[in-house]
Amino acid sequence: MTQTELDIEGPVIQMHERLASHAITIRQPWAWAIAEGLKSIENRVWRTRFRGPIYIHAAGGGLRAGDTDGFLPKLVAAEQLRYGEVRGGVIDVDKLVHGALIAVGYLTHCSSDRAALTEEDQIWAVENCWHFHLRSVRKLQRPIPCRGALGIWRVGGQDLGARLSDR
Image (cartoon, rainbow, N blue to C red; front, side, top):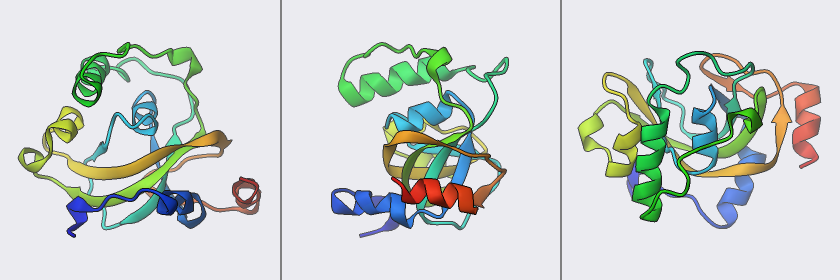
């Protein structure tokens, strides 16, 4: 099985929360789409060698002008491809969580070749970026408030560690 074929399901997904020690901060509504299982690619201008369980952190602060540019057409395309129909294509931006860990998944690999991506992944991929492949993402039962950081960062601190162990 190659890294691109790797898919973590069943009992292993339950271990993600215990195994994850890193996170990536993503602005809303993109973080929401990842947590909902609709977006499987995160685009960055930098490459990562990190592989493994990773938390999805919804960036703090509200939406800024331009944060949702191009989002709705991609959401509609992802819903159409995944479900065979559009299930709404709309989200309530006032209910989006900010400044918290909201999901956990697995970063399987990082690529820059958009043409080699699946049709579903191509919906979200941006030209001239590195594509972080996120698989088996599951929403946390409840968000865990914490500060984010740039890059892929270590989840830690006594306060946050206690909240994670209570899960």
